[in-house]
Image (cartoon, rainbow, N blue to C red; front, side):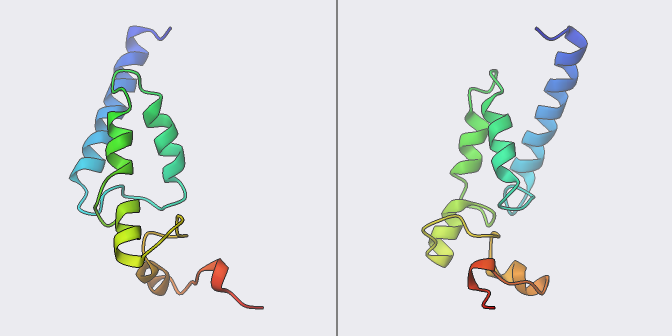
Length: 99
């Protein structure tokens, strides 16, 4: 059981994450790999009952799986939210790299 002080900090961090995700024009403001850890953490927040995690999963903003399927016909999770991000960073998909 958490003390009152720990619960206060915990709630503040959750509210910060919630406001950051909801106010972002692209959705989750991070990469397609680390979001799995965010989802695990969000589903463990009992007071939210998984609502924010479900919202992240079903978001149709640019950084979301619905956008991957809609915009790029993805059938699995891509290595980044959009191939355009790879061009900006001068990288390429590992699965397309030929040796």
